[in-house]
Image (tube, rainbow over all chains, first blue to last red):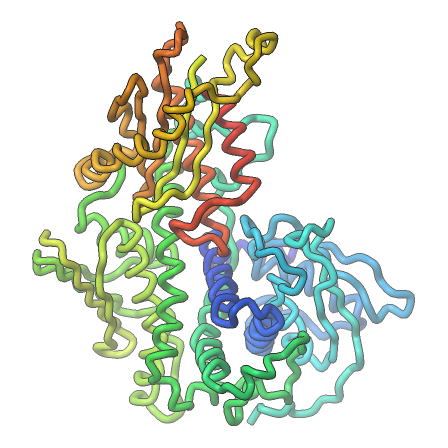
Length: 182
Length: 237
Length: 157
């Protein structure tokens, strides 16, 4: 699958990663100013942005990769890391720490990555700088009928040893038209 | 150690370190940036709305909430995930939203010029800084060529000046709006596209500022998706 | 032993960063004496003048801002036996280095290593700028920047 990721990556339209880093950074920094450093609100806004992106990004992803329906949550997570992150951000995170029931696991981002490169966050425990990723994952997974909790548990920007996103599968949704879709 | 360096390797990151990030060019998918930029305007509207609404401000969430498909993204009517109803809000024309979108561009522009020129000179293989841009026309060319290429993978299509400090830059197919299409027709598309243009206006103003030039930048959609940027500076060129 | 005063000055002539040190060259030989390696040896009266000397050179640098396409401006001024070299970034942030050569030293000042010091300081500045929580003209308080700058000072000066 990594090979497939490489092949798709070769053909996508690319931009400087610093430009992406700067753009995302200026959005987060401005949100922090707008909400007067209420970091919970900043997290929420980033999460919403991500969620909206995820809902739309899944179609681009499916058409680009031709990925088929996955047989298991494990396979889904593998597709996310080996194809999803690879094709959009040119990184390949590690998957660790599967729970025994196979319903939760951690995605560990490589360091540095195109979101947090060069970033030094204000001294706070509350801000999850890359929260947009959680929204994106949740939104995209929702569109393929997976209800998943996604949240950060560790962030090197806060001095942790790694940047870790925890995924927990709640339930597999029935095929139904989601609210908000006409 | 730099004195012996050959062409293109004149930078001086020490050999035992991993290659310096600024010496290499890394990339991400252009679509990722597009997705991000498309969320700028809706987010600006939500932020403005939230800040204006003193009730929600008082109860600003103290805990992180996660978005779900049926939970509105804000107290704006029908602002559900995956929809663009938020763009229908009258607030779209509010100065507050325009200023916010412009500010995102401005902070980016302020830093972008320094970064791009720095990288360009390093990649030029001269092994150190090349020459500094001081002429206003060169600054505009830099915007048309390097900045646009970096942001949109294309150059501006036209650059004109009256030689008295006014510049007109034309992009015949401005990427950020060319994919917009309102079911209510072209008139609605254009009026909703307008607010998106504050972002590139902010970028250009930020870049000029970082060169020490104060300018006023506006944009108009002459014939969708052709965008004309008007730049007024006090410099006679 | 040459003492140095390095400062970064913003576009509004505001101080952004400053750092005082002495040459690290020969510091091993000197370690038996009373001096601490790297500690500047400006006299007290000079010390308090340093920010003013830096600032007084700004006019010269700002003239150059619009007239030369060079980043490294070389030696631009001298003052009470202190020499002043300057560098200007693309975004018109000024790097100023004041140093004394009269302090009974035989060490000849080396223009190319000063230039290299400025170029690498510019690297560090650009990286600092990439931090979204740093805005142009803010004081630079990042410990990482501070450490790396000291390392290049040690390497070149």
